[in-house]
Image (cartoon, rainbow over all chains, first blue to last red; front, side, top):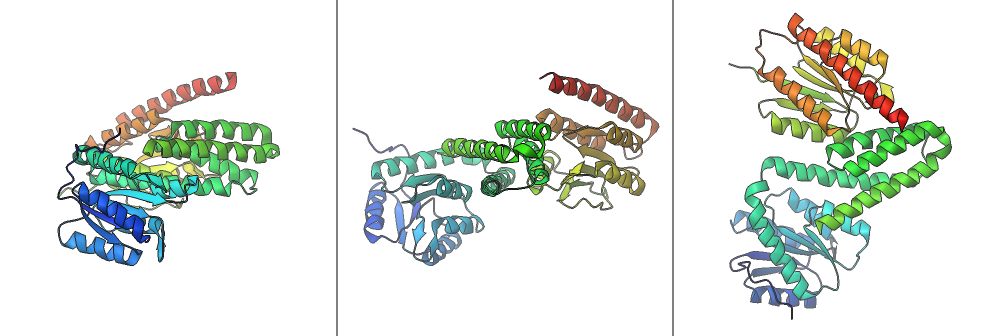
Length: 239
Length: 157
């Protein structure tokens, strides 16, 4: 029988659950209170933002946020983006009934440490929280520098850029436009350590130059595939 | 009082420029690093990192020449994925320190090394003094040879 990972000291840790379905919020609260967390529940973004700000000024910031994506006054993804600008860096778990690749990428780009599709098994969720808290306590000292934070932020922006580019590529574009995208992608992907994507963009760029404007449509499709597979790989890695 | 050295990146790809700025800033915290996506020269910098290709418009050489006119003592480095003889000749003539391929991590390291060398050199020896000029030419020669090897490799594939 599987057990909850008890190696993480939850006592004294603060958790905010942002969930508008009362029954789910209460169930989660009961589970994590039993594990030793000090839990607060919020059913709207407005209230969650107020709680979050108050926690920062009271010197007992939240260590973990469990955020539902679909809330009455906005999306959980927007909330994650907002708190990113307020300071502190709790473990952020996004819960959503929409398990599409697009929502997953958006959530991870907005700063979620993990995306879980509803319905969520509470044992899995408790172990996920424990794992991230453990990881955070090990890596905080090593990586929580302004440089690492800025680098992570830029990488998240870059993933959003790739996602937008993939969407843009579904529409026809001129030979020159496509050439420019491929040229930029070849350089930028390498700088962000996405060497497979950089290499794919380089190959497609050479193919485009050889074939001229005849094959722009096929090259666009190939580029979409390369970007999607890179994004998928990163999403899996993040999970 | 020592004046803080300034580095400017001109690149029309903002995703690339901001990450390069961050990496340079981390390696050289003493540098004031800025970036712009406009291919327009801004005066008053000690080091210029210039993209050659601004949306298909090959502007690297003309930007480097302008930098040399305005700031003869500055270090100029070009980012380019393609290298043509005309570009090389113009870069040699305006004493650019090198051309780097954005997609090659080794080239980024070389760019960092040149930046470091520029920062540690004495202010009395500007980069276009005779000694440094010969180093630059030797750098470009090596670069041409390296590039030619790469071109023949690409063609043979």
